[in-house]
Amino acid sequence: MTYQQTIADADKQIAPYARTWSGIDAESVARMRLQNRFQSGLDIARYAAAIMRRDMAAYDADPANYTQSLGCWHGFIGQQKMISIKKHFGNTKGRYLYLSGWMVAALRSEFGPLPDQSMHEKTTVPALIEELYTFLRQADARELGGLFRDLDAAREAGDEVKAKQIQAAIDNHETHIVPIIADIDAGFGNAEATYLLSKKMIEAGACCIQIENQVSDEKQCGHQDGKVTVPHEDFLAKIRAVRYAFMELGVDDGVIVARTDSLGAGLTKQIAFTREAGDIGDQYNAFLDCDEVDASAIGHGDVLITRNGKLLKPKRLPSNLYQFRSGTGEDRCVLDSITSLQNGADLLWIETEKPHIAQIGGMVSRIREVIPNAKLVYNNSPSFNWTLNFRQQVFDAWAAEGKDVSAYDRAKLMSIDYDGTDLAAEADERIRTFQRDAAAQAGIFHHLITLPTYHTAALSTDNLAREYFGDAGMLGYVKNVQREEIRQGIACVKHQNMAGSDIGDDHKEYFAGEAALKAGGKDNTMNQFAA
Image 1: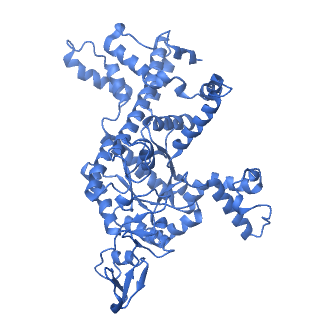
Image 2: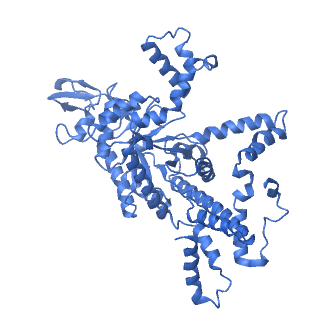
Image 3: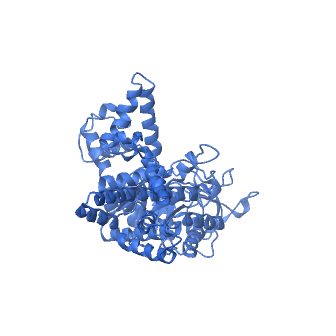
């Protein structure tokens, strides 16, 4: 409904109670309703799922329509990202938020900082989703509140043209609510545990859940060693559990991202159950590293399988884990991806050890031979040394083309000595266009950075500490923080407003009229930033 229609609707509801509700103003009710457009997390999940589905269809039509997000560990961080995106680009189209399990473990656990091994409280994940959307809804309320104040000022000035323009802006207001891709790790237990946690996440607003094929109780960060995968049927049971949760709660468009860590995982905890040659269990077992054995040489406690009429002993480690044959990672990733898409997943995530378009694209082309519209979510990870990786890629490409690279030491290309070179410039250009090129050449629908604000917070804090506690003193804060906030128009320079002070003043006036004691009067020091 438009602003005026919302006012009229509220007026109808108030009318039967005119004698006892005389202090309730229909326009104030309308403003509060518009500032609280989403009544529940499920409303948000359904709204955001529809956005993702439209974006996926747009990408299928043209890979230039790829999407992006940045990882969040606090509601304020997510809010500021969306405010900044609207400020710089005018809308939030194609921009999401990512909820990183790594950052939840490192920054939100009651145990303190933890490694990315699913040791943090699983309830922290839905709690963070709810927190993110609380802050995004507050961003809506704040922005609309400013428009309402501008509308009142235009009316008081008798400027009907401006009042109509502001009312049109209210009617066409774009919410800060965007999809969140939420990391459920390996499901935090069995399929039932995955289902229960998925429900909590969806009820908090999640429209997209990302789940990985590692063993839940052996889970490792995707960019560390020691990863252990599960047979496909185990993983598919968890994908189905997530889908059941979406459907039970009426989020029929919910999106599931199936992540495979097989490229860097050389171990499995289980030998897959198989009914016949060539089934999915048999395909999984075919990657096991085995030795052929004679029946007469079977040792105590040996575990044996048969393949093509041969008796084989899978190599088992003292940890009771079985190892895969070296060099099978890409083949396993392809099989994982095809199987997941054939059994309910919507998007893929292939965790790689470096950002290399040819490597990713090679796997995607094989997947698309079976699933033509296969699409990826890709982690533009801070675990990669982007500078070194791309300088080495350029070095290798130039060497292959016969260019003279004798001025460069491939092993030391990270050195500052190379920063001003042609090779460094070419590498930086490839980094700049990586997302666009990977979207076109490697099937990547969504690019995200998992831990950006973890690193930006550390960097900015280090710079401030050096200045403030050093010779610069207070100038270290004023020059490098506050003055830049003012110059760049950062909303948080008015931190009282950002925290909801003006929204509270509006409500006080609704509730108490002229008797309202408001915080935003002439003595509020935030007025110093009005200019």
